[in-house]
Length: 337
Image (cartoon, rainbow, N blue to C red; front, side, top):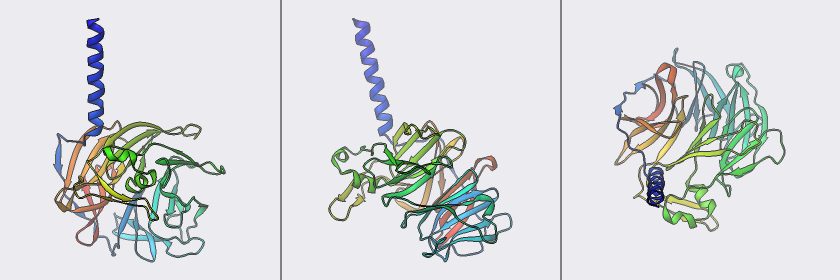
C-alpha cells in the first residue's frame, strides 16, 4: 500500500512539473551578444517583411515599391532581379505578401487577395519569370507553409487554429488544433478573437516531417503525415511569455494586448538543428533578442542584438544569419552564429 501511495505522489509531482514547464517562459543559461554587419544594400527598403534564401541569393519581401520581391546577390552587392508587380493584373499581387521556398518552387501568397501561386526556383532570374498554379483561397486564410508540393498548412480565422490543404483536391480544407488558453480568462473568449490575437508564422524542418508555429506568446511543434491522410499531431506547446488582452467580438473583431504583457515574439526561422525566435526586449524597443530552441522545444542559447531586427534567416552551414533591421531606416545586415 505504501508503495502505491508513493508512486501516486511521484506521478502527481511529475505531472505538475511538466505543466509548470509548459506554462513558464524560457530562461537561458547561455547568453551572447552578436554584432550586425551592414551588407551595403544598394537601394531603399520600404518595410522589409521577409527574407528567403535561394542558393547564394536573398529574396527580400518588401511591403512598399512597385516591385514587391527583390532578388539580391550579397557577394556582388547588386539587385539581380525585381519580381511581382503591385497591381490587379493576372501576375500582379497586392502586399503584404507571404513567401516560402519548398523544393524547387518559390510559393507566394497575397494575403489581402487570398491569391496563391508559385515561381519555379530556376526562373527567378529569367528575363520574364512566369507564375504558375494560381489558386484562390478561402477568405479566412492568412499565413501559410508548404509541407511539400501538394500539402499546405494555413493559419487564419478558423474555429480551429490551423487548416490543412491538399492541392488539386476539391474541398480538401480540414481544420485542426486548439487555440492557446494560457491566460486563465482565455478559455471563455470566442475562437475568432483568439484567432486574431494568436496570429502565427510557421516554418518546416528542412528534412524531417516536422513544422513549428510561433505567435507572439505561444510556440507549437507538430509532426505531419506527408501524404495528408492524417492531420498533423501536436508534439509540443510552450508559453513564450505572460499575456493578457482586451477584445471586441461584435461587428468588428479586434484583440489588443495589454501593456502589462511580456515582450512579444515577432518572427520564427529554422535550421536542421534549431528554431530561432525573434523577441522584443523589455523597456528597449531598439534592441532585439534571438531565442535559440531545439526541435524538441529545449532552450539552447539567447543572442542579443543592439538593433531592432524585423526579420531574419539562418544559414547554419556557413554559421551566418541575415536580417533586416530598423536603424532607423530598414537596412540589410549579416551576423555570425
